[in-house]
Amino acid sequence: MGWYSDVIFPRVYDWLIDTPHWATYRQEQLEALDGDILEIGVGTGLNLPHYPKHVRKLTTVDPSPGMNKLLQKRIDATGIEVDQRILGGEELPFDGETFDCVVSTVTLCSIPGVQQAMRELFRVLRPGGRFLFLEHGVSPDLKVYKWQRRLNGLQKKFVGGCQLDVDIQGLLESQSFESLTIDNFYMERMPRTHGYMYRGVAIK
Image (cartoon, rainbow, N blue to C red; front, side):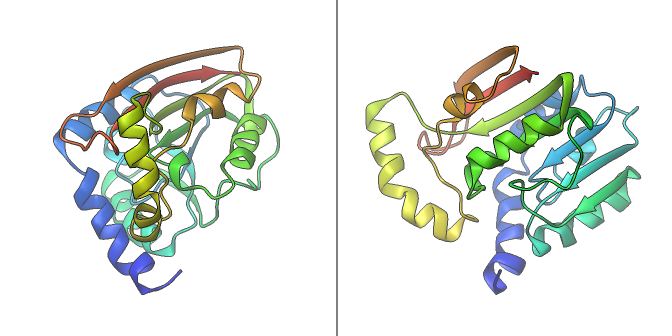
């Protein structure tokens, strides 16, 4: 992955989104979790302090060794039992219909094969299972969208492969979810190019 990706970027990631307003959205996203849980793109574990108290076990995937090193510190601090897998979301090593909930927080933007990852997370969800997401993506504002396109090269290079103009709604609608609820908004204290959010739940 390289020295920057393994050592520097995980700390930059924490600095950028380990903030009180991000914590509020994480808390709201995760408050209804139950059952068998998978978090894709767990990163450095910023969600872990916000899992409900009854959640004592979950499975995580993330391809970055550097992210997983920082994640381990948060696992130790929370006491949650974590089945930690260092791998991407495109080929999940789980049987179909394994999980009651899949969680994704600012993750879909940086998965190279994101369409395949969507098929995989849908596959491993049980019927009636929920995909809870909090993602940034393509803005409906044409001026913002043009800047997202301009900035994508630098963004991918320095922010872990992140792409600013991912069509999150299109990705969700590409799977046969029974219901889909999306709340869109611009995240406060974020550039509009980086902070157009998609928050909600998709039910299989």
